[in-house]
Image (cartoon, rainbow, N blue to C red; front, side, top):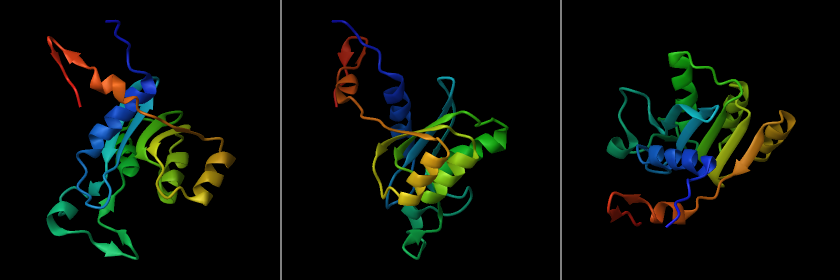
Length: 160
């Protein structure tokens, strides 16, 4: 059997999917991975502020149909870069769901030049306009489930 390496966009998106599995949001699990020069520089998932209660434990704190307890995955990843002094200028972000308007604005302000997303999710028209005006590339990734179904570790095949 000839083994093909997973393409970069699927590799980084798979990491975002894995990050989403850490989400503490009961409404939508989202993961984000920030990449520069084909290297992961940060990752985030949506959940509560460090030290606060989690939606999975206490329920969502909803105001105007939005959970105000949750920090979005994109924000968590960008804040991780800020906290540790890692520049985001020229980086790319891989997100499991199309970013909301506020996250889109943060991504643009952080100097991230390309957004890769897996799922459409309430794609905001103004966010799309801002991305076009700022020449921020947008790319929808399709995961090839065959790559994941045919993984082998030693003599055992991993299937999903």
